[in-house]
Image (tube, rainbow, N blue to C red; front, side, top):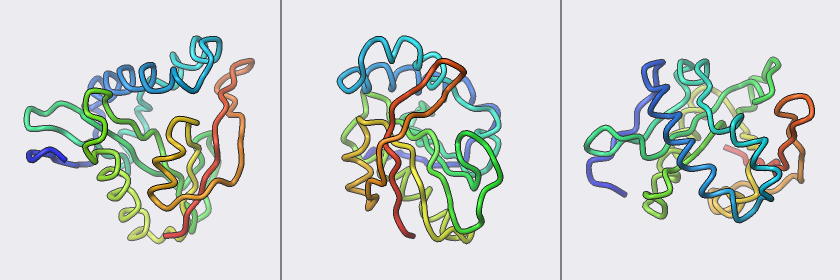
Length: 168
């Protein structure tokens, strides 16, 4: 992991930096596991930061010494598609690492922060809607596969994923 790494909650001011991170990460990392026909419709929707999530206090960014967003991720009580959450369950949200900074422990540092934050807020279990690409990462972080799912991004646009969970 980088020596001058800072992990902090995001704010609305981080929108451009997180957008840039997601736009760099997802097209590069997902292309080995998803057909171009899936990515052409899904990437414009999933490669954008959610402003409400950035303001939530439960979404974090890992910055290098020069303030560049190297990784990000967070959690919410409510599921990514909305709805009222159950107090004991947290949902991992929008974890990504810049492709130039893979294998440096950045996503692990972000997810460790996310899990600790969720536990301190009373969550007992975490659910994750993982990309196919990230399943090995989440398994290494203690998650187990619940099953394959299809996420409705918009009417007529779906994205295959894998639902995973772990106890805190």
